[in-house]
Length: 114
Image (cartoon, rainbow, N blue to C red; front, side, top):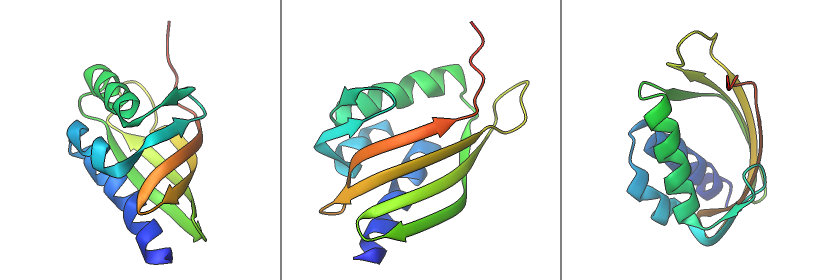
């Protein structure tokens, strides 16, 4: 199970970095819930990734640490390609169900200027 959970995390970051927004339908469960965004469904991920890539087309997430415990993954990443900032750090915890990301919590140091 640990390797399936780890593989789901790696698929998610690889798809994000490749701007493969359509992959969200295969990576996230239909009832996926994002606690930071208060959104549901894989289509909400597609929209969030599209908006992020429109704002930061060169953004790349680099996994710094990835820890798996049961069906849960904790990940520390840095986000490169954000103009005018040191690479922001993200901390994400997500739960995997049947090989897909089902629920996510996260914090980011990304500055969003008004």
